[in-house]
Image (cartoon, rainbow, N blue to C red):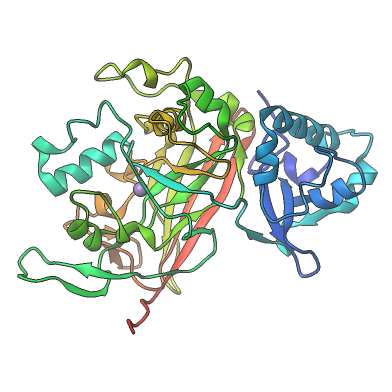
Length: 417
Ligand code: MN
């Protein structure tokens, strides 16, 4: 696959994250436009609500793009998703006959504010990166007990909170919580002292599964509408005290940030790659009929208030042990109904090397090896005023499938009433 050229010139530059090959979906607003669905092309957004109104796109009997979420489009199903993508490529390709009709509905990205692209139905976070699970397990339980006995057989997860999933750019307030220092007799309550990130991908479920009915891994793959970058902000001191035996609770419930553009499964198709070799054969219901992961370069930057941006992690989505399709198949295996708008966090994506670790907990090895962030500053965990940003792009032959950024700045904890 090579670059597909568009008449929107900015989409044809090699470093552009949003060429015609990509066409990610988001929700935007401007000073004069109500929140609505749009598609990114170069440094512009095609206003799909306007395009629908003038009859350039007709996906359903009633309008589906004049609302601030993609859930209605997702519910139309994979056939409609294909029709939409084909129509958008037809409208935006170099030499398109309808260029003059489409052009007035392009909005410069610089004038737009991005909002949440979906109504998150429910949010589940997994723990499916082997390097991350091994690193964290070694720190919490020792090297010999690093991977729990179920880990090589089950994509482990927990049910998170949809109510605190926020779009990139939203400030994150440092959480308060209950903690207990290892040498203290009693717990205390106050602002988190070990605030962290988790570099993850989010898979967005586009079609429903029926209550009581499992789905195969192949069916699960077809149910996925697209992917975003996801930062599973984590309060490590709260987590360490509360997590046994039911897993994280308040340590993860205060905020989860996602990037505003949903990169579709179709756009990522050329980048499919296999999960790593299985150490233990998986049970048949979890086995993949074809490659289900994607080769996506990922990185994290930190920027202290008034300071410069420094990259602290560079890794790749293909490091995951389980794919989103396997996680979704496992999620539905009990008969749990999955819903359009369900968000599945991949789990922290760490590689085998030190600079590939996707959390500060791992990068600073629990605070023992503070990370150099330039200008004589170090970080073991996040400080107030720090801005953390995730970046991601699949790299094709002369083009990128970019995700844009997933960013958040930490604000001081709220004084407890
Ligand atoms: Mn996580």
